[in-house]
Image (cartoon, rainbow, N blue to C red; front, top):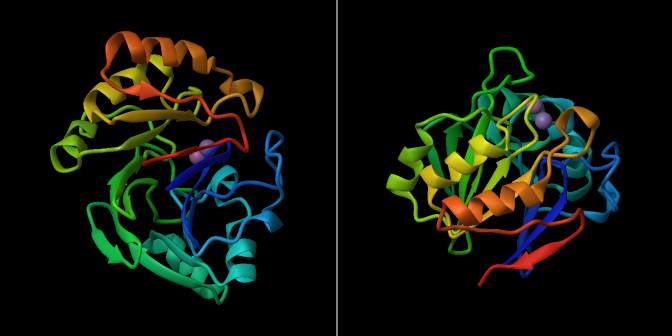
Length: 222
Ligand code: NI
Ligand code: MN
């Protein structure tokens, strides 16, 4: 399985022709080095509806007949646009052809009336990935490691809107993933953060390995 960091909060998982993308904010992302026309996901997972997460999701879904998987309010907005969507909500799990999706809480605004921000635990072709979404630290992240043996956790570190580096290190201790990837930093000045500082602290304080990916960079998860 390939995990590719497209930039900001956007991460793509792919295995053969199966592609799942989280929060495809691409064309207005100053650090992205591809265009939204370059991605062709079967599945789009949206953590919340802020512009830096919703991004190009609806246009990509329209162009690729992608299935949008999100909370009920966002899935409903997608359906109103004539897009394919599957509504879920916090605590729920659903099986898909690629594996499964569980929706986790996130401490953040939803960006849509009546909604909640969320995170995801995705089992994608046998690999277990936690995508935190935009969130502050919460101690119930410990519960995720009670139920899932995570291969990777994808965590925001940029502060201002989300956790900062030290909180993301504690989140890594709670989650116990094999690998951790920092996201949601350095896109704009308010979320400047040094991923090398995070990497150093992860190596000192956790048993996880931190991978810093530049926009466009990918790693193979075997
Ligand atoms: Ni947000
Ligand atoms: Mn954000």
